[in-house]
Length: 157
Image (cartoon, rainbow, N blue to C red):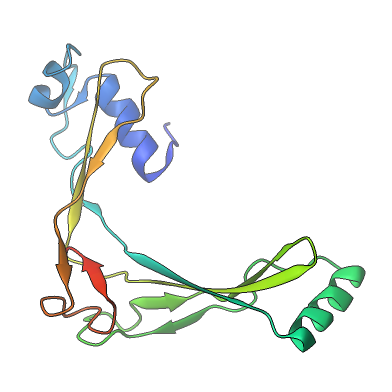
């Protein structure tokens, strides 16, 4: 069983020779199992974080709450459909609050879950020490992106 995450597992498999033989042989790794899909077609989910300072009242309430119990990282999850999206919910919103010293920051991350771009993982060397590189398709502007038309740029639409 291998549990290295979305990018770690393919990197380990590539380094061990379980991938496309040409991918392995390029770095002197002897191919042992022909798995052409390893490290390929990794979905790209562009994410945008909106950050702003909490109001004085919200900061006061969060501080008071934090004295009684831990303040959760994500307090609610909202899901919606992006303009031109095909899935019912392809744009999750995960509002969070974070604290640094005495300041509270509100963070609103949003991720596009239905992009059409696919990334490829590549080994920089046969050694497991360096991280594999990830190549992604060219970013396109909103004029060509039907999934995130209100964003300034969207990966590989």
